[in-house]
Length: 454
Image 1: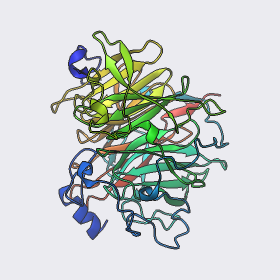
Image 2: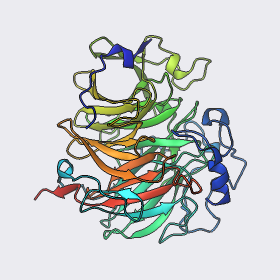
Image 3: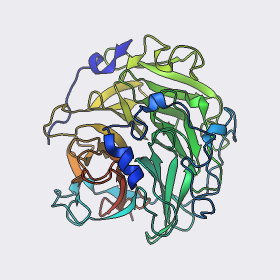
C-alpha cells in the first residue's frame, strides 16, 4: 500500500494568494460529511428502515413531492433499466470565462454573502421551509448538487441530503426567466447522500457516504424512478465523474485511507455512454513520479470480509477523497485529509498535485471539498469550514475567491454548480447559521462569471 500524500513530492503550485427537529439534529453537528440526529456515525447507522413509511418521504398527496422517488430499502441489486435514455434538452451555449477578472469580495450583503462587485444573491431554499412555487419542504443537510437544462429554456438544480437514514435528493426547477416553478424529491430513504455526479446523459448519480455506501442513478426531471448501481462498488462513496471520451467513471472515497476508483463498463449504450449496470471496478496504484496503473478489485460489492479499499494491498491511499470532476481529458479531485487538489491526466495515465494547500489557518484554501470546473478550466473549490468560501483555481494558477458565507462558522460550503448560462452559481451552507437551528441554506449568486461567445 502506498500513500499519495507521501509518495509524490508536496509541491506547491499555489499558496496564499428545521425547527425543533433540525435543532435536535444539529445539537451536535460536526464538520465534514457525517452525522447528526441519531448520535451515531453514518457508518454505524446501517441501511434505512424500509418499514417506516414516514421516514424521509414527502407529504401524502403533495403534487410537488414527486411521483417517482425510489424507496431504497426495497430495491433489488439488479433492479431498473440497464441504462437511461438521454433526454433531449438544449445544448449549453458557448461560453467564455470571466472569472479571472472578478473583483475583490465586498462587505456581506443582506443574505450574509461577501460578493465581488456586480454580483447579487438570493436564498432559494432553507431546510424545513417550503420552496417558493411549491409545497416541498427543503431537505436536511443539503450537500452535493448539479444543474440540468430543461426543454422550455429553464433548468433544474438537484441537491443531495446527507442526513443519515433519510438521505435522498431534492430538486428545484426554474423557468427560463429564473423564477422557481416547482420543487420535489427524486430519491428517498437512502443513507447519508454526500456528493455525486452529473452525467452526460442528464442523470444524477447520488453517492452514499457510509461504510457500505451505494450509488443511485436519479432522474432530475422526475419522470423515471431512481435505480441503484451496485456495479459502481460498495464503499464510503463521496463523488463521481464521467470521462466522456473513454466512457469510464472515476469515484472518490471519503475514508482516512480511501482510494481512487475507476469503473470500466462491460458495454456502452447506443449513444456511447457507459452502461452502469455491469462492468469492472478498478483501483489506482501510483508509482514514484506519478505514473498510475489500475488493478481490478476482486470483490467490489464487498460480499466478503475485506472492505473494498483493502482488497488490493498495493493500491495507493488518498486521504479523505472529496469532490471530483472531468474536464478536457483531466480528472480533478480533492483530498481533505491532505488539503490537496489533484489532476489525473487520462491519456498519459499520470497524476500530479494541482493545489498543495496549508493545513493550518493561513491564506489559501482550507478544507478542500466539493468542486466543479467551469467551461474554461477554472477549478472551483468549496471549503469545508476554513473561510467558508468558494475559490477558483485559475488555469494560470492564481487563486480567485468568488463568494464567502459569513456567520455560518460551523458549517461547510457544498454543491457548487453553474446554471446553463454560466451566470448563476448555486451552492449551500450545509448546516446554516452558527447561532440558528443549524438548518441548511441554499443560495443563488448571479453575475458575470461567464459571457456568451458570439
